[in-house]
Length: 240
Image (cartoon, rainbow, N blue to C red):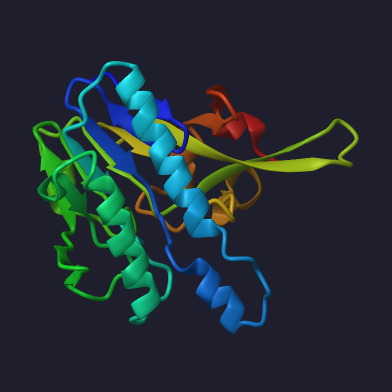
């Protein structure tokens, strides 16, 4: 199955499916409650990132048929009206590009409700040979015989690269691709601009997803750059 990495998203051209990882809308609210004075720019950047991705798909001549959010739409574990309003605004923007009925929203571990902004949350979504899940709990249907691909989020994969003298370090969001239990796995980074994610080449033992650390070591790393994605090879080869 052909797929492309477009910024922090994954797109399946033949199916017209765009996949977005963890948004964590309202992350700024949590930081402010903890006393951090952070400017309210995250949602504006999120909207800009999504609009850029939609524009790239359009320029490439592809038709967008579905958008799938992989869960953790919001950050606060409880109910926060501000997060709901952000999601409503986001859906309004996306509704100009695709019918709202073709936007699928999965339930992540940060969602404790049945729906958000009148959008029903589901545990997984299956499109022929592809299953989309959040990734915090194992979904039996994802490992069915007819499934070839599992697309997931939750892990927030990132990689830290250091110079030869170990003076300067930079963390980059990345995708992970590999095989697990006979399925091709694609793990998306978080879509949240502020936080790069978990540095897997330094903290793989803190793995929080359904795939064991020993299996993730054999996954390929695709680091997200400003203009394109760079394949860095197996995770185990760049581990600290």
